[in-house]
Length: 100
Image (cartoon, rainbow, N blue to C red; front, top):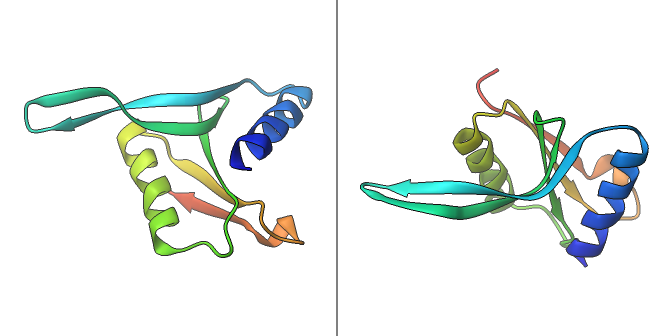
């Protein structure tokens, strides 16, 4: 279900005139090993904001840590964690910042 929500949100963001990229690969480095695509950002908006999409019963620490990792690896400052498995989407959007 997350992929359907991702496409729908991407459609709405583009219709609002925003530049987006979907499934953006992030390299991962461990000591001397570099994996070109270790992680994937769901949606990157205007090359500034990372949106991580979930469809889960409840957001847990691991979801927040995932987005925090993406922010650190990419050098971006702002991320949104969005859980679509809710009847009130406005209460299921969490803002995460990186070193602000």
